[in-house]
Image 1 (cartoon, rainbow, N blue to C red):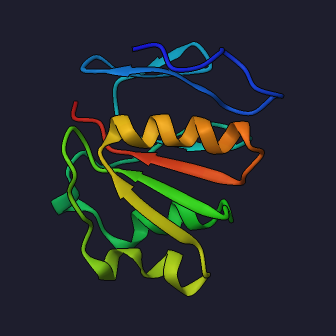
Image 2: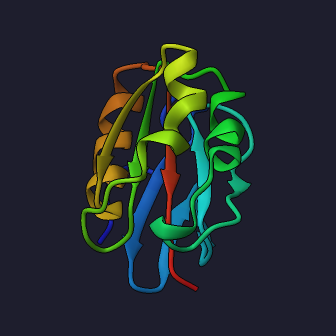
Image 3: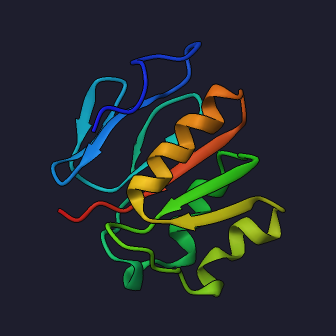
Length: 124
């Protein structure tokens, strides 16, 4: 499903999402990724909520966003609270939703100029 224009004021834009992966700035990603408001999209070395550790969210926290949108895969699943500690300790907000909803919400927040990061689980 196509979501937004390819670019919004030099910010990263999620153009589409589906079973084949997520398209960011015209590039298809088939593995889990971290999409910052600005800067490079990075691999996120995890595919299942059960495998998440604090180190995964430490990678996200280092980007110093205002809010993190955690896309938990095709259905809503919550990460264990202890894995979110790096975000909580820095006062970074986190919202959990399925990956499709996280992609849509990310684009809305980017269009508002918000400092947001999408951490998206994608099954390989």
